[in-house]
Each structure stands twice: as structure tokens, then as C-alpha cells.
Image 1 (cartoon, rainbow over the protein chains, first blue to last red):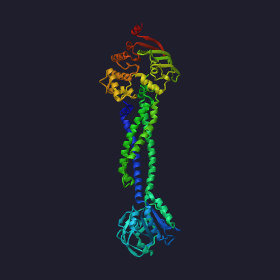
Image 2: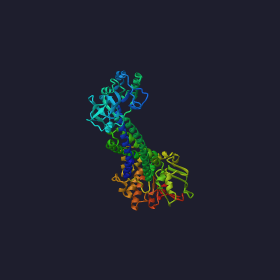
Image 3: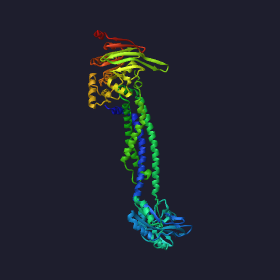
Image 4: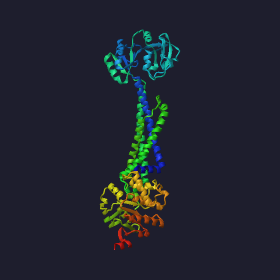
Length: 384
Length: 234
């Protein structure tokens, strides 16, 4: 017979109450687990994206006025003013620095205005293989342009012009085949026409001219690369590009802050439930505690009995809550939070949440335990 | 040699309608190995006296010594240790823990000691056999008769081998025959050297004791030895 035998015996005799307490706490723990697991999976997905895709830097000429721009490059100011151009050696210098700075991809661009039917639009001359590597989130209906007379349309251009893959579009009086249409990205790419770089330069009569270079560098070396490029190319404005996943990261961060609020609320409510139940248990067992004290149990022994019960109940709640919460997160995570990689079972979360559950249970039971320990044996027994 | 010594012990309760003296200036000596009955009407102070002897109820004034230890000079936790080592309680209405078996109830006072489970079990079996319940070790209290529950309560009181057993109305909830069996059990424990102080209303228990203390209105009214004990003393 040890003190914990008494605790277990009491839990068995108050089975229904204790099971209800476990169920109540488990719901709280499951809520915490579901929120935490989904938030972590979202953040991991965003981090994985940034790790895999690297950081995008854009090299562009300094511009005095900005009115019609793509990625900060002035394409037109006022009505029709030509875009500034990069010096030809900028691309060469960037290529020279590529290896030492962890540059993965270099995507030169020439963006200009073009007449499409009766409207002026932006057309970007790009290297499609580099562009696809940079814009990993791109999804194309059809395919990317492979021939000089092929273009890829941004989502809104295609929608407004009623064009789709296989159609023909006339740009600056020349017919181009629509090789593919990009899925909606939610940014300025939706309003662009993409064509092979040399073709666009020829259309504008500016062979060899670039007005923007995008590079992708490893996330770890991005700040160093930015500094080196700024130093090596002082005549060029070098800055970091925020991609569409930035929005996703912001959502994940907000979701995490919201989760913390919910966790605090659940923690508070759960603690109150435990405290109320344990107080009721102590009140029901006044006489029993009196017997323990009369036969020589110290106050600390009484506290250990009560706290062991609380620890067992909250530990069981932690385990049940973790399993339930993870099942909900795994089942609903993909649907609710649009997580593509799934929600992984995290043993660290299990350890954390069970520890939190036990800590909350013990903390909430401290007052009932102290109250029980301070019962005067004479008052508790009331038998003399 | 005195095991218990009370000097000028008083206990005053504040009842809300004024102060009530439950005990007044009690001085008393009880020797090691004595079997003492405390008798008196309800409200005479006998239960208060027992609780003070049991280190459960500090007196308002006076000194209580058990085995030379000034019980109420001890801290609350040390007093709990004292109860564990020196006193076995047999409560009115048995007061067994309903979710523990007979053996577990008897092992209860050992739960706070350093004995191994095997040692605890051996001690519990031994005392349960002594009180005649060697074959009902694993019964829950509600599976035992009143007399059997009383025997479990006695086994729990003596499993620690305390020098002093305090019993509160041990036959109060039993029929005459079972009451006599319980008193026989107390007598055999007393013959083994145990000091027993018993509060009782039941005059049928008096032939089993050596000494009877009569109380009235919180004072000692009489303190008599049984004829046999008195004869032996002379």
C-alpha cells in the first residue's frame, strides 16, 4: 500500500465523475492540439516553400517617376514614357557573382508596353525556364511558350480578352499563338503577357536591352547576397520581392496568435473545471481525510494523495486529448486550412500538451489539496 | 510507570452562545498496560478527553504527556508522526475506507512508513488472522458484517504495534453477542501488554476492564478499579 494506491482507489470509486472530468479536459486539450498542429503545419509549409524556393531579389534601374510598373520597374510614367534600362554589364556581373553568393536562378526580363487589339498592355519578355523556376506556384492551362511566336497570358488578360490556350492574339500587329494561360496568382502577373525575351526585345526594337533581373538566392545567404549585389552594382536598385506566399505566412502567423488566445482561454476554463471538481471531491471526503490525519498521515501526505489524483486525471486527459486533437487535425487540416503536405503527428507536441495538461491539473488542484491538508482531524471526523 | 499523564487539563469551546467548558481541570495518570473504560452521560466530556489523549484536540490549558512526550508542544506534522507511532484509533462506526479491501484498510497506517509492500502485507495478514479474519482479506467493508468491520478497525489500530489504543464506543453499533466477542478480543490484546482506553456507555463492557473513570460535567466524578484488579493491588 502506497499513497498512490489510495489515489487510484478513490478515482475508481468516483469513476463517473472522474471520467466526465477527463472528457471535459480532453476536449480542451484536443482543441489546443488541433489548433497547434494545424498552425505548425501551415508554418512548416510556408517555411518549406521559402526554403525550397529561396529568396527573390530584383535588380532594376533607379527611376524618378513611378506610374505603370511591374515589380517596381517603371514601365511607363504619365501616358507613354519609355522604361529605364539596365546597363548590359549588370547581367554579366550578376552571373559572375552567382556561384559565390548562392544564386540559384537568374531570370532576366524586359517589360514594355504593347498594343493588343485596341488596348495598351504590358508584355514581359522572359526566359521561361528561369521564370518557371522562380514562380514555383505557377499553374498553366496548356503549356509554356516554346517557340518565338508563342505567348503565355496572365489570368485576367485571358479572361477579359476571352482567350484560351490554342487561340491567336495579335500583339503590335503580329500574330502570336497562346501556348498557355496562367492560373490566377492574385498579383500583377495576372495582367501580363509573357513572351520569349528575344521576341519582346525585337518587338520593341531594343535587342539586348533588359529593364529587370530577378535572382533567386538561398534563404540563408539572402541578406549577404543583397548586400554584395548592392555594393557591386551601386547604379542598380536591388531589393527583395515579396511573393504570394507572404500572404500565406501572414495568415499562418495570425492563426498562431489566435491559437494562443484560444489556448489561454481553454487553459483557464479547464483549470476552473478541475478546481471545482477537486474541491467537490475534497468536500465529499472530509471524514476520510480526517481518518487519514488521525492515523498519522501528515499534511504533505494528504496533499500528495489529492495531487496524485489530479495528476492521473489530467495526464489521462492529455493523452486522450492529444490523440483526439491530432485525429481532428489530420482529418480536417487539409480541408479547413488548405494544407497540402498534411498534418504530421508530432511527438514533441504530445509531450508538451500532456505536460501542460498535468501542470494545469496540478496547479488547479493545489488549492483543494491545501484545503484538504489543512483540515483539522477533529473537525473532519466530528466523531468525538 | 505512567504511559499517560494529564495535569490540570481544561477544554473550553466557544459555542456562539458563550463559552462551554467540556473539560475542567482534569488530572489523570494511566499506567502502561492498563485497560481503562471512560463512562459518563452524553456531554460529560469523555469523547473530548479521548480526543485530547489522541493528540487530535489541543487542550485550552494544562499539560498532556504520553510516554514522557509533551504531545501538544509538538508541531502539527510532528504530532501526526506521534499519532502514527504511539496511537491506534478504533473509531465509532468503524470508519473503514469503503473502496479499500479489509487488508488494504489494515495496511493504511503502513502506507506512510518505509515498509515494502511484502512487509506491509505480512503484517496486515498477521493482525487480520489475530482478529479472526484471516479468510476475508480481500473483502470490501460492505461485504463484511458489523462485527467483522469492527475487527478490521481493531486490526488497523494495532498493525503499527502502538503502545496505546483509543476506542470510541467500540460496541455501540453491535448486538450483545458480537459486542462480547469484540470485548474478548480487546481483553486478549490487553493481555499481550497493550494499553487500552475505551469510551463506552455499555455497562456490559465493564467486566473486561481493570479501571473505570466516571465523568460528569467535564470533571472526573470517580475513578475505580475493578474488584479483581483491586484485589490484586491489595
